Image 1: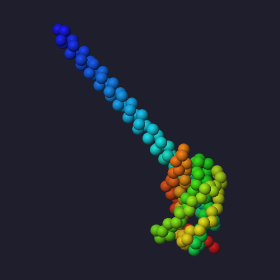
Image 2: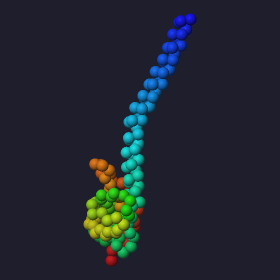
Image 3: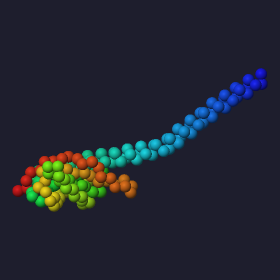
Image 4: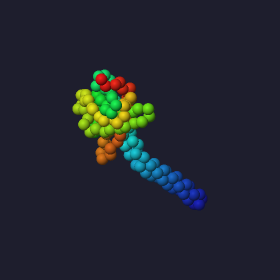
Length: 149
């Protein structure tokens, strides 16, 4: 009879050890995966806010000629935008300029830039800073340019 009791205790100890190892593994995985997911989600949300915060104002100010482009950019108030990349394009060729002179919140600003090409389209990409990391978000709102008169 005593031998049977020892085998029963061994099974209980084995079960407890398996449960403890499983809990420890879950804790280790949780501690490493959650911060990565959180920082990735924060970056994505910040870029989304920045992209929805900026827009190109189509009208008399947004145009181009042989070597110069003019663009009016409107900014809302959601995102901490530190710079804007302005991408001028023509037939698959792209020239990019970056400015840290960002419009104030809920304002518009007109930019005159040398493009080097007779640009036919323009798009913008917000640049944000998360901690010490600078992130260029995806370009938004492609606009077909008219000729400056």
